[in-house]
Image (tube, rainbow, N blue to C red; front, side, top):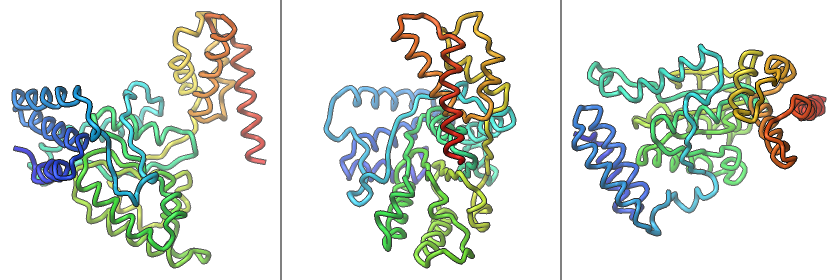
Length: 323
């Protein structure tokens, strides 16, 4: 049978007349039943949801309280785990999160819980947001991105109340929740330049995340883990460290992104070497720009010269930023 939280979420979405929330909760129940071996019931629920989604309705949107408009962005990612290029050890830990989520009923029978409170740390562009998208796609869940920097600057003095509302939504609506730019509120509480408001916000977050008992994944992403309060780390089930891509990662990333636009003679090893020092997202942009350049020049292949020229632009931009 569906869990109590799933049933309550289904009822709330119906009472709020939110079709997409209702459909998401129904699919979560279907997935739960499938894991219990009730395949016939699971398929019947999925079929009903599919039929409902074919009928256009004004309520087929993810709705949030008016106060949170613009602070939470919702998307339905389609990135597969195979598209994520990170170190093998890190990928195995991500796969473990997926496995534990899918098999959470087995763990609960033994009084254990799946990993679901995660901290991602690493330099910008190294795959933190993409990992959240991959997890949401693999688990067939919507991704809700909470933009912490806007939450703080727009609602100074009311941030704690908004955090409470967000965690109420986490409890009520299934999905993967990403607190982006988390160091905006997660700073060390002992820092002399910290303000009382932010200390209260951080204390509130620590309390909310510790008391949260939903089954949803909660991810906090930071570009600078050194700024985070030490008390945060024990609130998370796992901490994943992201690094700039090494030579082999660059090679796989370029090969995947260029795809059929890469000729057999394209010197992949040299291209990977030229990419060293750039983040995953910068290499991604260079590859996509090279493909666009090839298309607009009526060429069927990306040339090594055009690709390295675009990489050079990225390297120059990085040096200016560091300077």
